Every structure is written in C-alpha cells, then in structure tokens.
Image (cartoon, rainbow, N blue to C red; front, side):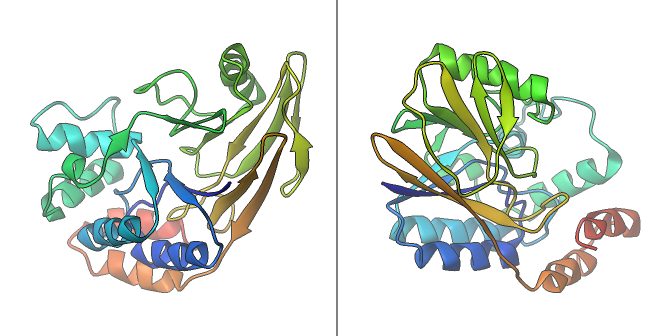
Length: 255
C-alpha cells in the first residue's frame, strides 16, 4: 500500500496545488491530510475547493487539526480560543472566518485520528484529540511513543510542528534517523514517529510531504521536498485587507 501524507496547508493554494500535482504522479492508493487547512494564507475558499476536488479523484482521509477546530467552533458560535492567540494569528483567524463561504465541518468527513496498517495518524500527538502539545523535544516524542508502543502500533505520523522529523524509538532510547530508510517495525517494543513537514508554512525548511510504502513487514518512507512560486503567496497576503503589521509577519515565514 502506498500512502501520501500532507499536513498544515494553511490556505497556501499555490503550494497545495504543486503538492497535489506531484502526488497525482506518485501512484498512491490513498492520501491522508493531517489537518490545519486554513489560517495565515488568504486564499481561503480556493484552498478548500482545491482539496475538495482532489478528494473526488483520490481517496483522501481528513484529520482535524487545531486550526480546523477553530473554525468549527467559530461557525457554531462557540469559544474558539483554546489559548491566548498573538494579535497576528487572531487577525488572520477573523479574516479567514469572514472570507469563508461554506461551513467547514460539512465539507469533508473529518476524523479525530486514523489507524491504517497498524500506524496511528493524528494532527499533533497520540495524547488524544484537543491536546495540541507539540512533539519538538526528545522527551515529548518519547512520551507519545509510549502510547504508540502501549497500543502495539508500529508507529505514529503527526503534523502540527511544521517541521519534518523522523524518529526511531524503543522502550529504552530514541534516535533521530535519516529519511528514505527501510526498516522492519514488526519488532515488539519498537516504533517510529514521523512528521511530514508543512505544505503551506514550513519552518526551517522547504515545503514537504511524505510518501509511505507499507507492507506487512516493512515501512519505507520518502520525504518529498518541492518548490513553488512562493512570491505569489506573498502577493496574495499583501493584497488582502489584513493590517500591514500582520501582512509583514505572515510574509516573513517565506523570506
């Protein structure tokens, strides 16, 4: 089975279209979207529509992220700030909300998590939906790996940090490993933790998504980096009605 995993699009339609074009050429059986479709970028409805059209052509699983939950709550007139937001994020959230011409929760068949071939997929971690803790430090990765191991999963795939990372975890130690390594994960007491990186707002790297070839014995992973015309995304932000301060902050991620 071949799976493509994408995450953290954040309304970057230009990066999304390039990633989907590459995925179409990759002969995958299924696509998993790990959440965070909107915020930061300004091409709100175009982003929703592009992924919706793609899902008609290729089986796609949609997992909720924290930024998706924000709009579910806003559109249902619920409190949406699960923590204090910086001003630029709050302004971007309200801008996105006002631009949206659909009820986001009804557009896709959203899931809290998914298990495929004994691999656990969710947006942030294995600590349960609505826990938006990041997997940045070795201890944070190790804590979520203990849950993966307890449930006898072969591994976990998570987005949220916008940084791709591959980790190989046993009961006693954690190693960060290189991409494109073929490993046998059927051994009891061992698992992997992978982050595919971000499509729309990568931090510290170029945009990326993950290809996974899965058999009963092996998991082969390939991190796919790609380029796109990012200046068009910056231009879209600059043409919006956001404040200059927020525009500059959002554009700074791409310079």
